[in-house]
Each structure stands twice: as C-alpha cells, then as structure tokens.
Length: 159
Image 1 (cartoon, one colour):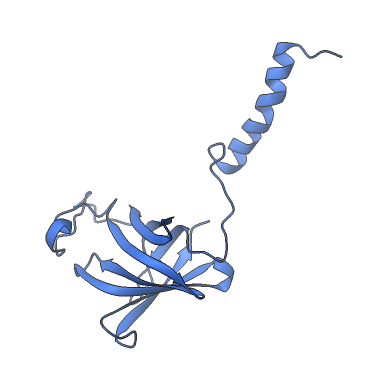
Image 2 (cartoon, helix red, strand yellow):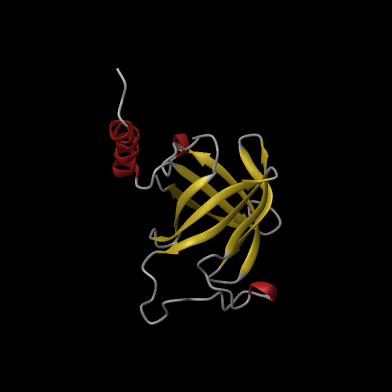
C-alpha cells in the first residue's frame, strides 16, 4: 500500500503537534538529570521565603554558570531594574540577563570553587552548591573566607 503525500504529511506532523501541545515548543521539554544543578531554578530568598527570580544554570567547559532569566514580582515603578550596588563592569547592568554564578567545578557531590553575586548588595561571595531531594532543591551557600561565615538559600527546580 502506497501513502499519498498528504497522508504522509499528516502522519509525520501529528506526533509533532501532540508534543507541542504537551510540552510547549517541539523539542523544548527535556527531563532533568537529578544529579546535576544544570537547568532552570526558582531562587528563594533565605529571609522572606519568597521566590525572587528564575535562573538558568548551564555547564561550560566543566564549570557551572548562571544568569537571571526573569524577575518574579518586579517593582512596577522600575520595569527594568539594574544592579545599582554592583561594582566594576557589573555596575548598572540590567538584572535580567545578569550573570550571578560562575566558575563552580564538581567536587564529590557538590560544586565548589566559584563565586556568586548578590544583586541586592552588589557583593560577590565564594560559593558552593549541592543538589538535594532527588534534584528538586539546590542548596546554595555563599560565604566569605570560610564556609561557616555565610548564608544558605534553597532554590527550587523549575520543571
């Protein structure tokens, strides 16, 4: 039995259409690896417990990097906030698109040796991160000098 071109077209497009309806854009949805922090995360303020932003963590040349993708509940009077307290090249940069995490390398079950920027204070801290709860949470520890002197946030995987 020979398929006509129209039937062949329909047979090839239907699975793509179903995938688009289920996952958004075709090929967009990929399952996350629970052992790695690579992916999309909701940042959660350690003081207020509120979600502040969505960030994307990516791996490049064996190191982790992250940028702010979206602000949650931004100030309506400041639709494009900037890092006003940052120093050097980061001063005045828009928060959306700002790199806030860089240079972390895998070290056992955590990633260490990198730095993290607190856009609220403009300060840069040493950083370590650890995947928790089967990849659903990320323990983010920023510190000065020793890991005992710092603060910890738990980010949530944005599935």
